[in-house]
Length: 214
Image (cartoon, rainbow, N blue to C red; front, side, top):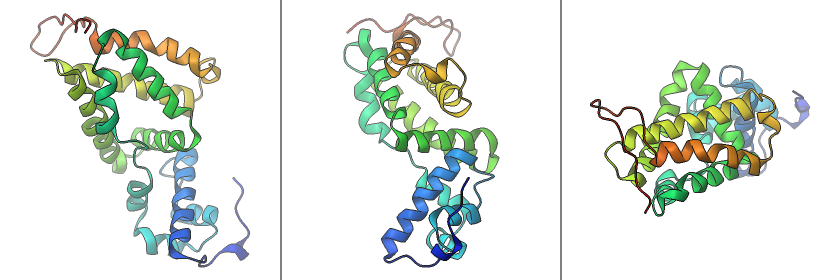
């Protein structure tokens, strides 16, 4: 990874410009290097500033991660509506949305950084788990509004995280090179089953019947 010339270090003109330059560099470093290798010094080099400025604006690497690696959309505002409504098309709506987000460079950079950090770094795993479990899974469960909604939503979450890891982080072929429309088509049946189809077992040992078409 190329590093900027040291002559660029120092205070940039304008506090907001400096902070955003650091934030953008941090997102890129967390996504490409992972949490452990994305040190304060590396982030500073990528932003063209002194490491002291990174600490001045964000306080610590963990606080920097929390500040810049937030979800690129508001799950509570988006996901319930996607899975509510006509249930026979819920999987397709969700697949289109998720793939649409992940195919945009900036949101993809944030989400892959979060997944990499959660998989490898215990000190930030809880932070990422809260974003995924409490927000994304919770929002999907709210939209489903059925007894086994938490289980269904968590299965959907596992599918999404698996795609992020295999396609965008590890880059498993041919999945990594699959066209976005083909990826939507491939994901839709699994998401549809998790959202509305019968599941083998639900908490309490009762067999789920699935949600009927609305």
